[in-house]
Image (cartoon, rainbow, N blue to C red; front, side, top):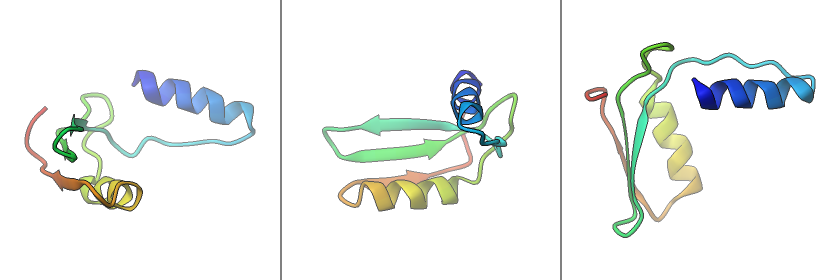
Length: 72
């Protein structure tokens, strides 16, 4: 929620609006070049982790990126 609020304020200053479609967590292991997307946000519900994973794969093609709906 803290990140969303800060981002929403920054976007509003540029005349833009946004909506949070859900949340989750990331486990980042830089030495192994792995990112795991999982969990949900109590306030915003679960994001579509497959979308997040595809965005991360585009940005970090040399990482192994996985996701699961389990976990908090």
